Length: 246
Image (cartoon, rainbow, N blue to C red; front, side, top):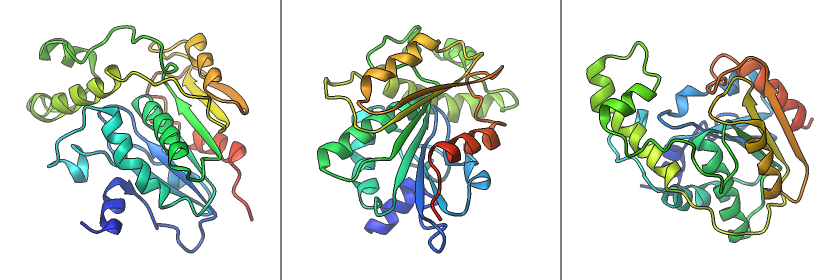
């Protein structure tokens, strides 16, 4: 596969606003989700090009095996993003996506590449804090009972979604952050106020991972997957904090 083809496979939306883009927002989805789960582009100005990460094992990359190592995901993603840092850019990651975004930023620093203007990290406790109830080793029936697959056919859940969810949970729950200096990038940490998977203290612990500005924001009355249905409010908040120029 050519370099352009590889970038297009991993970064959905790349080049979609070539004529108007002045900044980029790279979006990193949550466990079990593909790029189509996030529709922020519709609510952001044309001057911001939204590139959503499409990991193997889902949607257009369903035939590929899902990754179970965060290091493998970052090793593949960081060079692709490094090739597209000609514009000022930011990261938005939700849940699993927050960990991948964070480690990708650290890898970009190691590569000597232009760093993100800001990281928006959502719905995930800070690295190094223990998972409350690790799930990736649960039996199939117990793991299924923990997931939100409402309205999805039972056979589809068991044959397709369950293996993907287990792989993504393995990626998250076997991740051990290495000791590194705080990032020079500002962080905005987000969550729904009714998200029972993370509390404000666990969110605030992200502060030690930046030497720059730190902000924390809760969406009132919102659950863990608040992003669904809150795209407009989220996009407005990102636009205020990561303004498009011109």
